[in-house]
Amino acid sequence: MFQVRIHGRGGQGVVTAAETLSVAAFDEGRHAQAFPSFGSERTGAPVVAFCRIDDREIRLREPIMEPDALIIQDPTLLHQVDVFAGLKRDGYILINTSRSFEALGLGEFVRGCRPERLCTVPATEISLRHLGRSLPNVPLLGGFAALSGLIQLESVAKAIRERFPAKVAEGNVVAAGEAFDVVRAEMAATLAKEPGHA
Image (tube, rainbow, N blue to C red):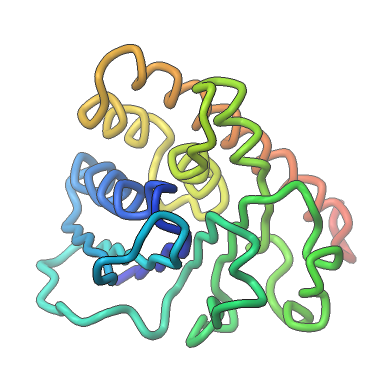
């Protein structure tokens, strides 16, 4: 089972991201589950959502305490909430920012992690460009498809079109595709720096 925890703030589409990811996995013939963890938080309050993906039926219902991957929609949460709690050492981290892990003050924390599983993508800027609004959730799903290889970009696009009205969907599909390309390029650059990489 692959478990994803998504951190963001109210109004950023955290729950929509988890649900869209689960639909993309379901469309690929897998079992998936998505659910939020929040009370009556106002816009801007920290929100967490969870997504589980497996080839077998998922019986677990509790929050994800040891995620395989983290998607962090708002970098201001990095030093306010323990977003990294329980993350597996070889886990994936995708952060919505144009800054590096070092610049975010996370250099020491990620030392020893697999560098090709650590990525940033300017999802807010991408969403502003293609949607005219700050909605980083869907571009981050495109970035996550590239980073993890867990789901196909085509499945993300299909899930987006199932969820949103046509005009909004197409802007989101383009945004997800751009984020996918950004992350692929960043991963290639990271791997090229690795010792022994041809």
